[in-house]
Amino acid sequence: MKHNCFYVLVWIIYSGLQPMFGQERNQKPIVIIDPGHGGSDTGAVGINGLKEKDVVIDIAKEVVRLSRELFNDSLEIYLTRYSDTLISLGDRTKLAKALKADVFVSIHCNQAIRQAAQGIEVYVKKGEPWSQYLAEQFAIGLHEKLGFKNRGVKYANFQVLREATQCPSVLLELGFISNLEEAEHNEKVSTISGYACLILETLLKFFNYD
Image (cartoon, rainbow, N blue to C red; front, side, top):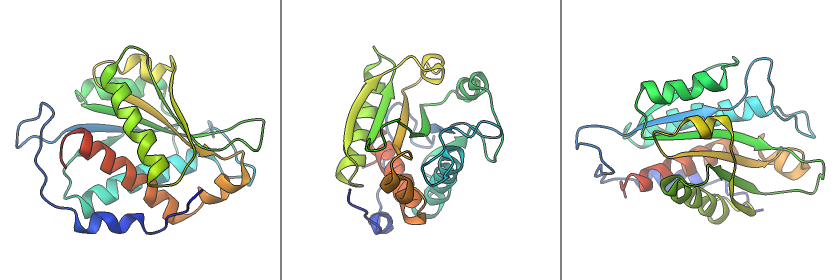
């Protein structure tokens, strides 16, 4: 796996945004970032003790920070949780519906019995072409720009995907924290920033901001 610690620098020279994808010129696309788990639900626990719930909330907060500092708040971003609290799956998708979100992105880390398992996976609900397209762009970017093994886009009937039907929806599995190399990688501040930048870049391209 390539560990690119300088990925953030790509966005320093970012400029010239032109909003599209059904949005008025003065209307920002509404994006829901859903950091999975929280509170008593730790999610996966890594081989090094790393908790999935902590990794994903750090990524989500970094998305908000970098959107403001590097991208001039070109997207209107909301998180389903801003702290270590447990939010029901139903409430997460209700937020997307209430805000009439344009995209829903749920963030997770993976786990497997086989400790050698590595790479990223992106899940969508079958039969949703825009979700499929967005998922493919995430998978490509995570492989080509952050160096993860691409385990592909997969179909699933997860509740957050099943219920967030009013907009393209994807669920990201960002590495296996049951794998020592990826668990240690996901502890790094540079990794968190890399994930956040990749998420923002992919969304901006999806909305034709490139």
